[in-house]
Image (cartoon, rainbow, N blue to C red; front, side, top):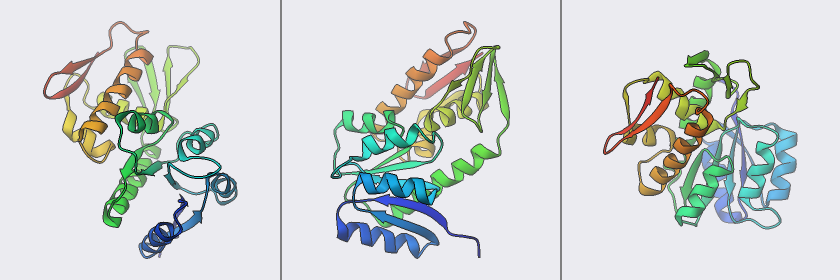
Length: 227
């Protein structure tokens, strides 16, 4: 049997935290449960987990603040937020601070496990992918670095890197909006669609040094990276 994947779970509701922990441990995950953000940060530094599941509303240090601090240390570890919040700005903030997925309470354990496995599979995909060329840019997908000619490389977030990866793989073709939302965000609902628009805008800014590269919106279908 393979070694269990290490997950750090930060959840301040004891009953819910224990349910999640026990459910994940029956699926060959090793779970460290933390009751607040301060304890979670200390355990992150000690345990070296492979994925984080963070409640947003926690005492001492909320999930968004915790994610920001961890992203200053590690910009590749997958992060899933758990929250009762459903406002668009909260969802967008979750992705902006470095989250890779966003699950609203109440949720089913099966859905959480599917999302965890999807993120872990994408992480494996990232590690085995090579450097890619796009116009005057070099894109190092494993390291999540975008470099224009010989200038300093620009670090990308986990989600930016995966979105750019799929745009390049489908260069000069339409990248189906619903397909990529389900693959990278877990669903194609309104909130995730708004989040994807934010990430497309960020990528456009980072690719603007090469006038021959353009990401266009194909209304009703998706996006196309033209080069």
